[in-house]
Length: 450
Length: 125
Image 1: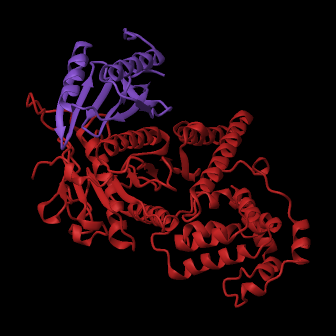
Image 2: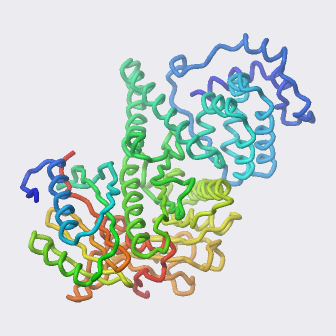
Image 3: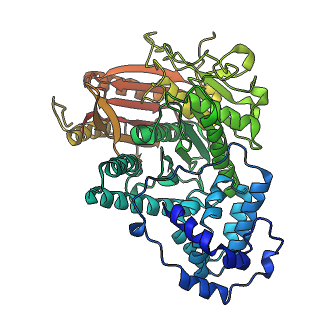
C-alpha cells in the first residue's frame, strides 16, 4: 500500500525530482554533480507526509520479489540508486524515498550484489542509516548485505505497524471482504510474531514480506558471529500462516542438536551456531506444485540470502549448510548449480529431483551432499523435476532417516515415516542434519541403498 | 521429583520435565550450563488439536567414566517410567527416553562432555 500511493506522487513530481536526483533511466548525468538545494525545499512543500492510517484500505499488492532472471542492466540500476542515496543528506532521505518509491521497490526485485550493498551501507553515516531504516523499512529489512541487526529492527517495525493497521481495519468493519482479507493477513503475521517471541528471546527477523502469501526468515543464534550456519528450506504446502511456527521449531531443535554435538565433539568449546527457519520464497500449493516458477524464486532468494551472509562475513566466513525439504530441495539445487557461490554442506530429504545430474555440478565443497528418504514418502525417486539425488549415479551420500538400531537390544530406533516427519524431535534424521551442519559428516548414519 | 499426572497443564508438564532433568544432573554430577530455549514449541494433541511443549538444553564437562554414567542414567530413567533406547555414535553414547505421552529426553556422554536435552509432554496451550 505504501508503494501504491508513493508511486502516484512520484509520477506527478517526477519531472523536477528526476532532474535533481538523476533518476531517469537514460540519464547521462553523473550523480556526483547533483546538488540538493532549492528544488528539494520546494518539492518537500508539495508532498504531504504518508502514514499507514491515511492509506486507503486496499488489498495488499503482490510482493515484488526477485525476478527469475535479474539482468545485469537492472542490477546496475540498483547500484546507481544506492550511489544516489549516498549523496542525499540524512534529513533529505524521507523525501528521496517518497519520490523514488518505485525504484526502491525495484531494488528488491533486482538487488545489487550483496558485497556492493555491504560496502554502500558501511559508507553511510549513522543518521543516514537511521533515516533510511525509518523511511523505507521494507527495503532495508530485506536487502541482502545490510547488517542483520538493522534488518531485524526494520522488519519488526513493519510487522508491528502492519499488525496494528490490520487490527484497526478489522475494528472499523468497512466491508466484509476487506475485513476477511485483513483477518487472513493478520493471522499470517501473528504466526510470525508468535514464532519470533519477545526481543529478549534473541531471535532475529531476517526477512519479512507482509503481502500476499508472505515471506519470512527467523534466525536462532547470531549470524554475525556463528561458526556454523544452517538454512532450513521448506517445500510444498508450507505456508507462513500455518507452518511458520513448525519451521521455527524445527530450526530451534536443530540449534539445540548442533550445540549438543559441538560440546561433545568439537575442539573449540566456544563454537557457536545459528539456524535459519527460512520461508523466503512463495512455497507452491496444489495449483502450482507441478511447475518450477516458485522454485526459480526460491533459487534467487536463497542465493541472495547466502551471498548476503558471505558478504557480511567475508573476513570470518562461517561453515554454511542448507537443509532442504521436498520442493525446497529443487530450489536449493538450482541455486547451487546456477549461482556463483559455494556452501560447505547440503542435506536433502523428500526431494522431487534436480536439474543437476550429479553432485559434481553442485557448488558444495568436498561433495558434502547427503540425501535421505523416509519409508512411505512418495516424493523421493519420483524424479519429477529432473535427476533423482538419491540415485547411485548422482553421487550423493545416503543419510539414514529410518531409525538406527539399538546397540544393545538390536531394536530399530526412532525414525521418520512419510514426507513430513524428518524434523521431529529425537529422530535419526534430526541428529544427522545437526552433524552435517557442523561438519561432522563422518558420524552421519548411513541410509539404505536403492 | 515433581510427578506427572493425567490432565496436567503445560506449565505443570514443564515443571515435571525440569525436575527430571535436575534429578538426572544431580545423579551424574558435574557443573551444568543451562541453555534452555525460553520459547515453547508447538505440538499436536489428539485429535489434531494444538498444544505446546517446553524444550531444554543443558551441557556439562564429561565424566571420568562415560559408560558407567550412561548405565546410571539408563537405570534411573527406566525406573522413572521412560522407554529408553541406547546407541553409540562415534565416541558418544546416546540415551533417548520417551513416555507414552511423548515427553522426550536425550542424554549424550563421552569423555569430553555430557548434554541433556528434550521437550516436555505436549499439553494444551
